[in-house]
Image (cartoon, rainbow, N blue to C red):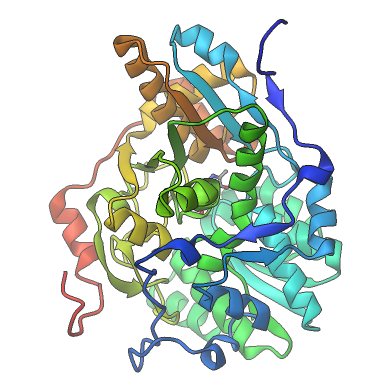
Length: 460
Ligand SMILES: *Cc1c(COP(=O)(O)O)cnc(C)c1O
């Protein structure tokens, strides 16, 4: 084709990273520690190890070690679907007639269809190493549950997934993928846990929520011998595992001497964005290079752009530790017309601190504009993007169009976190023209924020 940079830059297998990078090691202001909700003291290793397996507790608590060796067994698993391609979006550039150079790191090339597998295999591996029988988790739309089922099947670990009841009923295909990989899938709320029974009694006929499924999964893990709980986003350990995305992207760009001016990612709990930007952010924090980082969130669930930076509960049932993060309140539930995932009420404490310190920008976008961008992208680049990923596409297109106006030849890198094959009812609404936008009013947000725990130093 005579292009200087190939359409796809693949690393060789031996060029894949051997270590995950822990961006906290280079942060001057460390993310605030998790707190025990009873004592308000930082959660200790001893308290944490009842919930998570030991090595993951160590990773969660470690703010100083910059690199963690990736165990061979995890690297072997990564080789089944990694390195993931870094794609130069020549066709999109052409379509937009922009002088900007657009790259995306594509994480959808595996059966789970998203980046979540990168952390699922790590978490399952450490549980297996510790000699545990199984793990429990929650899943909403189903990507995390699918990724974890695949990882557990590979390692011979039991996997119990609490799936938000309305998704369980509306997304039978996701459910069956999980069962095919051997997971035990329970619609939540269920009568198999105390917290589930209590919620069912209080709200008969409820179709569940992510926060409620988390509460059930934690209870199941802590009350069953040989089980631990695992979580697919938000936690610092998850960002650590997801750094493989950024490390690969950086290695591929370095190979061709490419310096991104701007790095964009969608932000739900913050794991893909945190992972993608980590090595670049490390350079920025150490004063070695400069980049512009942009988090893109839905206007209907705007934790960074409209939330408060305080300690809050991680789950609706308030059984989990408190995390300091940008939050809309643990009782916040996005409006029912919200289709695109990224519906968590809070944001990773690492990204929250970096955003608070001015190292990162955040914007919010409305869902019909997101699906319009998804459609435009699919038609020229071929990949059918996940609605979540399409938030980043929307922002990247907007930035590329700005370059068209100013004539700047910026290099833009964004994270394409997954594919959208299981989101066709949302696409259907978009195609039928029945999709609407909803931006919560300040009054509505206030209700969620009122649920934030009150104690000295935690005023909103
Ligand atoms: C879960 C998910 C996200 C959002 O989660 P983060 O932790 O914010 O990365 C984004 N894209 C896809 C495809 C997902 O499955």
